[in-house]
Amino acid sequence: MDYHHIAAMPREVAFYLNCQPGKIYVDGTLGGCGHALDICQKMSPGGILIGIDQDMDAVRNAAVVLKEFAPHVHIFHGNFIRIQEFLSQLNITGVDGVLLDLGLSLHQIAQSGRGFSFKADEPLDMRMDITSDMTAADIIRSFSESALADLFFRYGEERYSRAIARKIVESRKSQVISSSKQLTDIVLGALPASARYRQKIHPATRVFMALRIAVNDELEMLKTFLSQVTDLLNPGGRLCVLSFHSLEDRMVKQHMRQLQSKCQCPPDFPRCVCGKVPTARVLTSRAVRPTENEIQLNPMARSTRLRVLEKL
Image (cartoon, rainbow, N blue to C red; front, side, top):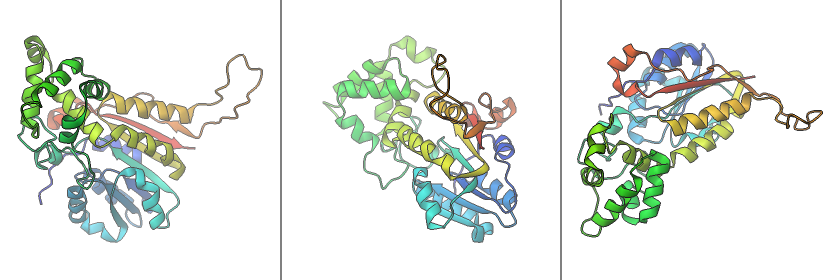
């Protein structure tokens, strides 16, 4: 199997993750293994990599790409929220770095056949883990007009969410909407001509993104992961998160700031009663963005934001 993907911001991730020989690292989203391979090279000799991915294509690819480091690599199929479970299976209680890349891989977009892209005519699936139950087609078929509109607005920040939802409900009365091309055509038909031609991105981009987030419960998974990962870091251990849209990035930014903050008592309190102390420090005062040179070489990296914290 050929698994095509170019890792986003590899130099910046390598710098901030600061991998050292003999240390323990987790790549919670293996993807094409661009970052994982770099971690393996830098943690040798004696380091350990725990690689996780919910896409079996990525898991199979990792077994091939990381074969050279096999004695020091443990690969798991599942969502990154199971990180504590996987570490427990290895009798590991703390790690020195965790990487999370929240973007789609080029393989998922161009080769998976699961309808992630509006540029192809594929089954409207969008499951990263094909063993999960709900597909994008299920949502399109079963959600009410108001539920669809809310989903497109909340997860895709789509300004024409109501018009698109109305068009979907109208269209599904006469046809089963089961392919990415069908959905793309419906979205285009729901928009005024001015909106179709003045957007910098494809008019179906936000709808497809919203569906993918909903199918894979991405924001709730990220919330759960963030709530537990800091406890798994050794002192000085680092968490690097690559996000690709504002909802993810906002959640990561707010969580990291919360861990860094001190007393949260109202300013008129004579003394602290909350007892809160910082548990980590944020190493990126603002999100790190890809260089123009990288964007030219890898256009998929354009919207990437990297945020990093270090456990105290």
